[in-house]
Structures are given as C-alpha cells and as structure tokens.
Image (cartoon, rainbow over all chains, first blue to last red; front, side, top):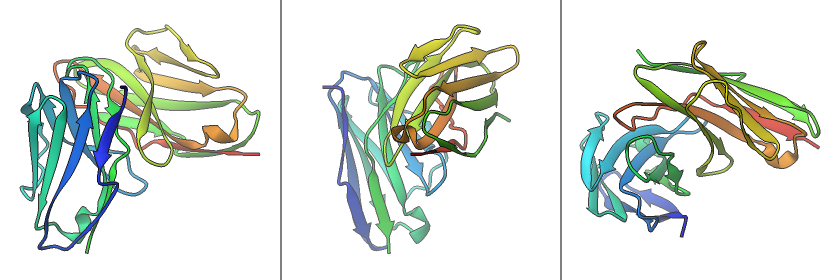
Length: 113
Length: 111
C-alpha cells in the first residue's frame, strides 16, 4: 500500500461548527504532515508529527488542532474557523523526518461559510 | 531569511517541445532539493537531489543540482499534454523536515 488517504474529499462548514479532517497511511512512515494550500499558491506547512509527537508548529492559529492517535493516523480538528481558512488541506507522510521524500494525499477541499 | 525562487512562473509550449524549469534557493543548512508535480490535487514526488552535478532521470524528465550556484533545473523533453501541471521545488534542510515550496511553474502543453 503506497497511498495516503484523506477524508472527507470536500467539507463545507459554518464558522460555529466543529469538524475533523482525517488522514491515514499504511506505509510504515513515522512522520506525518499537514499543509494548507490556497488557490494558485504552493502548499504551506502547518504541522509535523514525528513518531506521534508534534515536532514543528508553524504558528498556526489555535482553531486548528492536530492529533496523531497512532503512527498511521493523523487528524486535524477544526473549530470556529473563518472564511479565509477555506483552502485545500493536504496531508503527507515520509519514512522519517530526516531526509526522506514526502508522499501526499489527495487533500480535503474545505469551504467555510 | 530562506528563499526559494522558481522561474518562469508560467510557460506555454506545444507538444514535442523541450522545457527547462529553474529553481534557485537560499536555505540555511541545505541538505537536498525535491521536485514535485501537482496537477489537480496531491503533489506527486518526482526527484530528490542531494549531490551536485549528478543528473537524475525518469523517462522524459531529468533534473540536476548545482550546490555551488544554489540552483536546480528540471528538464522535460518531448513534452505531452499530460505534462501540463504546476511543478514545485522545495529545498530540504538538515535536522528537520521543514520543507518550504517555491511558488511553482505552471506548465501548459498545447496539442
């Protein structure tokens, strides 16, 4: 299995809602990442998990809350988002954090109304 | 401050043409440079370059890194419409995986 999967594919939520994005990989990778990508811009790193521990937090607002329940799963909990948070949220994984290429999932297209 | 500059930002060619995409970087503790292709959604991995002057090839795509001049190029020969995509480069530093992408080159290949 050489795939990173993400659910849901699309999500529309109001500013008062609470929702979660899910990412899964079964490649035995020990590092997982969340990126945010706005239209016509490159992906921007939000969080890095290494061996299920948060190792980099790129000053992301607290309305985004990551969680890594085990080495195969990564969640992103969303609460009280703003319309400007609408974007494609990409998950990626790599064998480790040191010098390995990252493999990306197809993303969740999030719209905040 | 770390910088990644890709050029051109946009390129339109016809099938069969050869293209060269550029990526220059200034990154503290540089270790490797990665190239990705992004069509509609997920960026797909193309190359990881660590050593200067060693060309990596995959079919019609090839890439090389110059660590002295701090740049990399991605070549695509005999382009096809399926090569239409945004090509992203990302330098990877030592000791962490804080990968930051360049703005990308949007390549359009016309029939």
